[in-house]
Image (cartoon, rainbow, N blue to C red; front, side, top):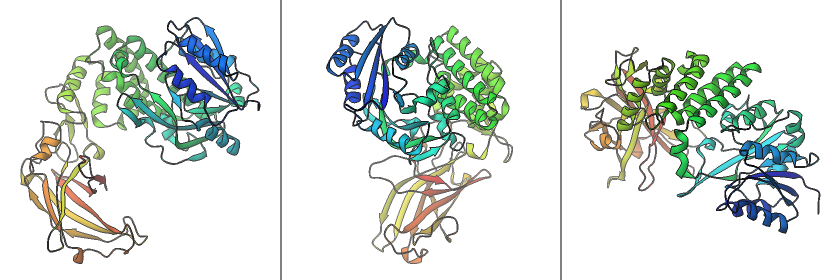
Length: 498
């Protein structure tokens, strides 16, 4: 048998329902030259017996036992029991499983590029089946030898189990997972991204991440969980500050306020007094340090919430969250003249913030598209500016736009033909908006397109016209492109053109 190329550490604790699938996915990898260290972290179910069975049947597998000390300690124990001479290192959690050829692809990438680590795409596995993990929706192309300073989207790549590390890189920086803490991956993964000379990013999926949904609500309101998550983010933010990367630190701090802490922010209505106090203390200190500049880059509804956190106004914050539960996130009233408009939450004192252009996006849906007997295309749908009412035809103006697409010519340089639009009543626009604060009953439109009068296309396969609208309401103007609707789908059909 060839000497191993890759060490895989699998921490194990009370996962008897999932462990067999996990270990089989590792054992059946197309890269056979592996060593696997399973660390039983004081399991009280049959997990240790299942792991021992693999060790007995496959001499690539080894079982280490320890008293329960947590995931980080089990991972660190596993690393200590691997051979430092094996050139690559990976981690797999025992309730997940690995795509059959993932390790072969990842090791081959590192062998080819010389990068210090490789990361890959992730499937999210729930009771409803397999979905793309939202954290990796941006990962649509493979990029060898990149770096987090050149691709800030890698700030979202914070887990250990979709990666393979060069062992010499891991040891040189003495990486170790923080023991006795939840959310242990981020304080290691973000520094690893920064300290690597280069990173390979694979757009193909390498890992199935199982989300056990029964404990989500409990974790969201756990006092230890919120403290540990904030502490982990604080540690990474300090690391970025110490390494003099102010831009990356601002981006990371904003991502914490947008994603990491948002999870616990939404749990405040369900949490008790101790949870709310822990959140306000930790998150408030984080916002105090991050400063107003970080808040300015967030959507207006988050700016309002985090300013309330910074001012330690829990009552008003809970009122805003209650309003969102009734009306949906991103729904608010708008006050003030054009250029000085503010988002406000009715009945909540001091819950307001200045609106940016991106806070008032266009929303458009195509309801019907049909060819008439005279060869003309008739389009029906609705379009409005979110949070600016279209309760009457006089509150809104719409103009159609058509641009030829094809012949290798695409983009803003192509000529645009303006097309008349008839405003019509369409109450389903309000119904489909999922809120009751604003009326969009008169956001409907009808547009008739005559192909003989439209700009010429290139005439090739896939050529056609990009159809859009100019929507104006209360001094705000947006342009949006109307997209084709899949049969039976109910989805946004726009691309904001500015």
